[in-house]
Length: 326
Image (tube, rainbow, N blue to C red; front, side, top):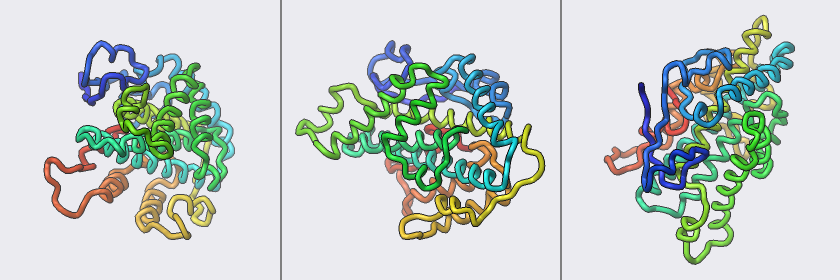
């Protein structure tokens, strides 16, 4: 039996009543049980992904039903697969991976700051970590209508509402368990953006709030749900999409992955898109999409040039805080 231990504060538990048995700073066990964490049967893909949280969040029958429904949604586009759909889904998966990386960096930063009593950035980092994981999840949902730039620039309210709506397929109480908690994280962020109570963080800590431990849990489950969706697409493509397909570099959506303000290109995005398209011209699950070079470079971009001491923030220690990047 193998397990990883993550620290969590009392009151940070997310839909895990057994955590309340332990006072103060507690250890959350994320089990990696061979044959239990593997979801090959529900998704149809065995890529070695270890689902650390999903089996504790949802019943196995509900996971199976969710995967069955997701593959059914995917069957319509994969039976009529085109080069354009191929390009769009490659971009969607690439963006989903980048959102999970961004969330990993943010929530690791929040945890580091919180441990060192640097509280002011914590509500911001928590909220945007969760929001990025919501985006990653939505971009892998089969019937989330893709509208190009409009999808990337969705309002926060729309992102939160859509996330809770789709998760209702596996959790009938998604609005309470997910929508309300994500909105609370947003309210926590806005509290210090717009109002800034004189009692500072005590005002936040003394009321119901989304702490670092709960945020890690939410981000992990959302990321695993995105992985499940991507595995279902890969399985559906393997079954239904016969023939070969290619990436269309002139598709307007490509700019969403490599271009930023004033149409400025990011050289690393440009290189990475080209690299994984050459290696895998059709969409694969997120774990496979997130090849080590991509992940290593993305995290490495946030490392200082100078040597790090043991007390410095080293993002290389936190790659797997919410997603088991290899």
